Image 1 (cartoon, one colour):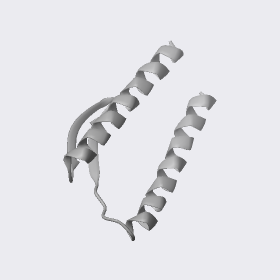
Image 2: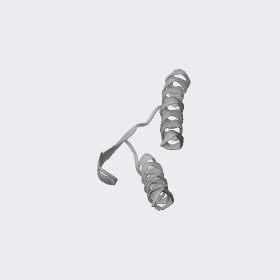
Image 3: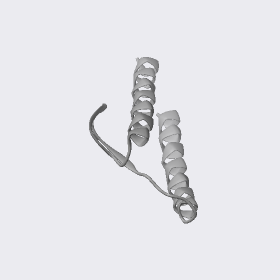
Image 4: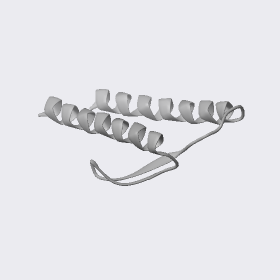
Length: 76
């Protein structure tokens, strides 16, 4: 249980750091954005500003689903 908490908390901190970094980098460059709505372990809805962002979010969603499957198999 402690390992999963540490991994989840690490991802949370990494996400916050990435948000702050993207804010500071956005001041110099053009920004694009995307959003994926999840219900449980399944991505249901996606909003993006370009096709490139859509494919990046799709790739990240697949990696996230693989992590969920891996953690499920390790727990069993």
